[in-house]
Length: 156
Image (tube, rainbow, N blue to C red; front, side):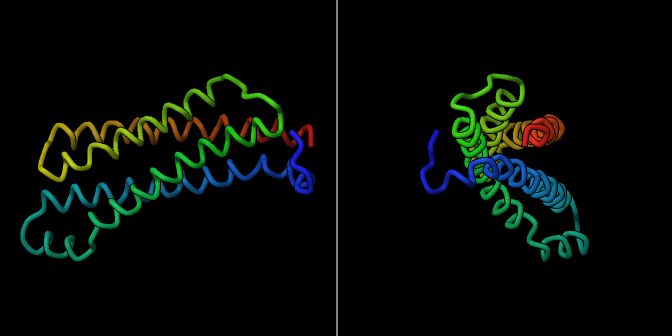
């Protein structure tokens, strides 16, 4: 695909998606940490609960989660777009399928928030389970993505 005057940067586009996703993996792990603090705050009592409430972990977890949802969707679309721009096609394989699955998981997890805010424990446990699966898949994506970047670098 011809990008006109931007054509010289085309090969470098290959590295935007991996860099963004590594940042998102770190942000995801931070959100996991905040989520464990929210859970701990919910079950704490007395002075411990007061101290945990001051950390505003619930607000931070919600804000980071919202950013993760948006950035995961944009990162997925961006990765597919760059692949298409540079190759004229998408490569149907495990990395793409798992990436799309992760996008669906994070959207579903975020959709459970209104139910969780009303005290629905089933929604809460489903949210936690989906996000644990998401973190595991994200780790796997990091490995396979690094392998893809290595193949790109060999041809660079």
